[in-house]
Length: 160
Image (cartoon, rainbow, N blue to C red; front, side, top):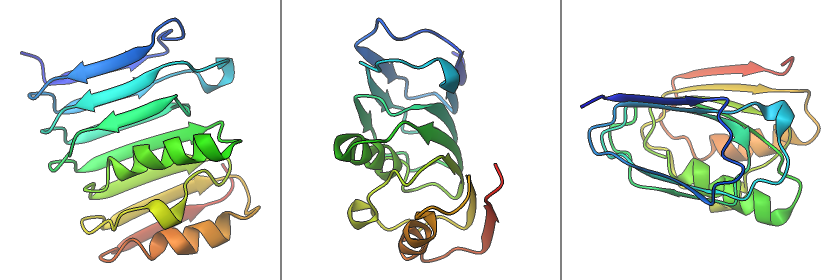
């Protein structure tokens, strides 16, 4: 039974649900071509309670359902396409689903998460933020950091 699963530049645009139900999964990558997106009509469902590494690169999907990932050590999230309140709410669900992560690299091109709805990230000790310029992100970033109580390493890169 494999512990690693990766979908890289796959076309899920004619799919309604990406459903990953694998208790033994340790490393999972969903990495799509951000430049080629159109209407995203799928929901991402992940039930992988033993996941230790999660990478997600895409525009905001129609929804996210993530099981509690208590073993999650590292997550790399690169997400864009959050131009409505609905998509901001949906993207916030993605981040809520990884709230047990210890190390997070987050790349966004605009303010996409509603910090008022975020959970406390008790386990997060390393946070790397990559974005293009400030443009309102500085306020969001300060609010997000209030949700991170045990942070030891903070890396900010606004030149991406």
